Image (cartoon, rainbow, N blue to C red; front, side, top):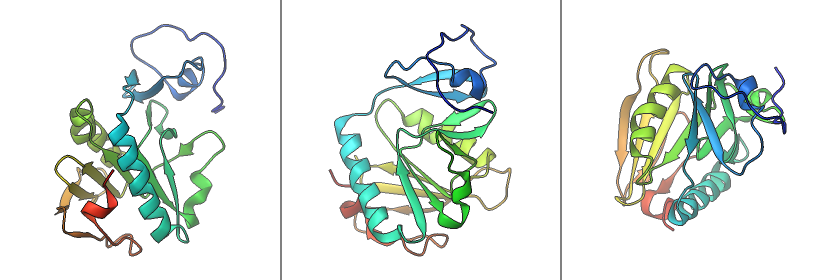
Length: 192
């Protein structure tokens, strides 16, 4: 499968999109994902979203970069031939860095983090959460910076929905059994 984007014009279609179709899209400055074979335009994030994302990515990198590769959007994650995502932040154990190819992550990261914006709530809380669980991402965090909360979901059984493991509030210290390197206070890790 060739994962390079080209300058060819895509075939117009409403469903049945594959990764190969995705990589035929022209570079137009937009970010897209494929959801169950349907091409979906991602809205641009807000400036606050980007500041929070940068802060959290730095916090995780400072604590975990010896064991994990931490990346942030835009980066393509190919979960199947008809499902791609661009998580806000992701972590991959260095022992699994073989899933990092030149143009995309091919397979489920160890941790995916999505930061809520007013226009992404349904996408992050329902659509992406179901997709990440279905394709075996072991842990998923939803960051709500307006309420200073991080929801931690864990996959206890492959192929089943996530279980809400913990809701960390502003003064709480975020920890994870899967990621012992993680330890930060919510309000410090996700402030602008």
